[in-house]
Length: 284
Ligand code: DGL
Image 1 (tube, rainbow, N blue to C red):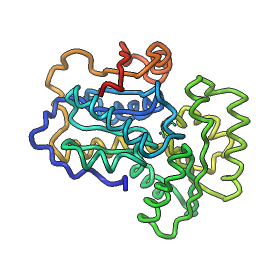
Image 2: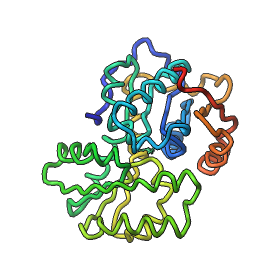
Image 3: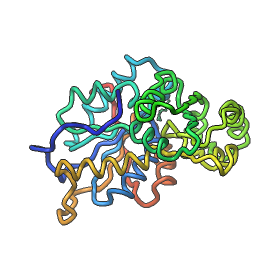
């Protein structure tokens, strides 16, 4: 079960190597943004699998196959640790990848669950995510392990990912769909809502307006970035800030549509995104 820190020790790993981060698409850039905020000295190699998204409607076998290919690709970039920024891949593939890996790997679900438990006052938490993430029940399982009396209501919001990837972040169509999805959660009197998909923070203002100010919105990316920082420090893998960076500090790779990705990436991370390279992920 995805959750706690990796147990790999950092011996033999180059602390000045980059961190690998991956997602099914643009959404993982919201995690990169938080990683940069919390870990400004670290180098990052990002992969967005835009050719094969959405992951949220795929089976476990397919998600694990994709995640393994991406892990192999990131290892060719000599990464020192990997953040599985995608909730869906964290839910289905992280435990398997961790067992196969000799470098530390973390996902986003343990961090998101812990943040929600800390935030709730009435013990009623909502989780929104892809069909696969909600179907896995992983957020509920992790939260109940942390606090057995917690009430968790999950709601799959499968149309959010295509709406975000199409750039409809502030649009009446998105408003209409979001209000249909969220109505069910409103009837459960939740006071905390986990944005359990990396794409959803890009709809934050819509979600905030529809849920009202009394509901705390939890973005697992924030806690994940803090968890990563603590893990790197604990393993002696934090980058030496005195060490000069050779080449780009941040590199971005996608499996398709590099130009479209670039336009979105620049709006999420202004100033940090230079070149985006398209690769054939099926080769890995
Ligand atoms: N961004 C991914 C997540 O966090 C999933 C989006 C997709 O369905 O590909 O769950």
